Image 1 (cartoon, rainbow, N blue to C red):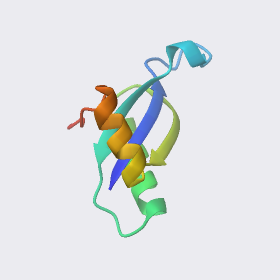
Image 2 (cartoon, rainbow, N blue to C red):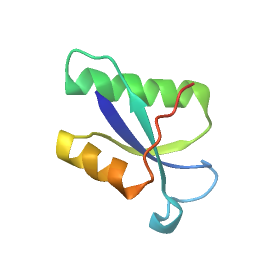
Image 3 (cartoon, one colour):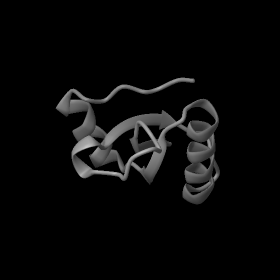
Image 4 (cartoon, rainbow, N blue to C red):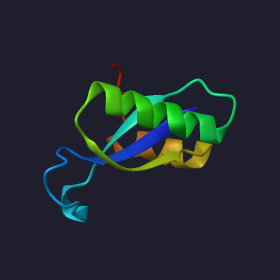
Length: 76
């Protein structure tokens, strides 16, 4: 399952929509909730990012992200 993680690069400032960034993770999970938990834990362990939201991408949403040119899986 592919998850999109929205984050701020630092925890020092209040989140602003204009500075929100995203990364994509391929997570092996038995259901959506477990995948969200694994994605959040992985990003928290490997970075100092302030995670705002984690969402599971549907097939249609994933295709849109791939076509937009901003899609690239992140590996830690």
